[in-house]
Image 1 (cartoon, rainbow, N blue to C red):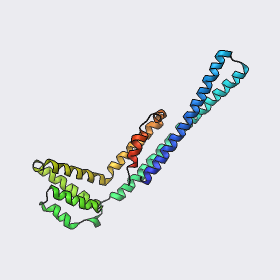
Image 2 (spheres, rainbow, N blue to C red; image 1 turned 180 degrees about the vertical axis):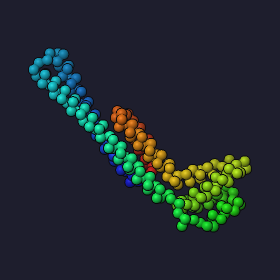
Image 3 (cartoon, rainbow, N blue to C red; image 1 turned 120 degrees about the vertical axis):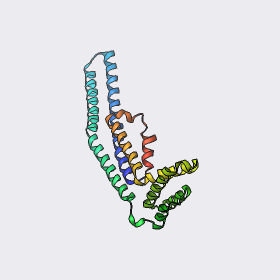
Length: 217
């Protein structure tokens, strides 16, 4: 799990923890009020029950005040989440930038030669991938896409599938897939801040968190 995901999840977990605390206080205060009202029905509004009723009303007011404060803080939380995402985007730009120093001229000449077949592109791509050479991975994938467009009628089903897998791998080398996941998580967080009760029966821990934690770089 990368540092940006860790920061965002810490922020989100802090909010969810605060919400659960506030929700427990609201439930407790409402239960206290229900108990007092039941007593009043049975015994009437005696001086002692008036005191209990006033205490229950104060408990509900205090709990709802906590919830309002939590909502007021939501804009700050969202701004922090967006700042974390922007820092992550910048780190991806630095990681996946094309570097002329990593250009493999021998491979580049082969890409321009016109003699390569689908399996050749796949072999070259896998070699560049093992070396974590983003520059060559993107260059090979671009050349393979052009080859596929010009020769799609002559490419076998399995070869075509392998080329598409390769092209998908190359698209990930610009970080766009990672930002899509991060943006989706921020949007989901926003929805849960706007409607906190979504956090009670929710897919955050079963779907959104695992997707974020899969971003290992």
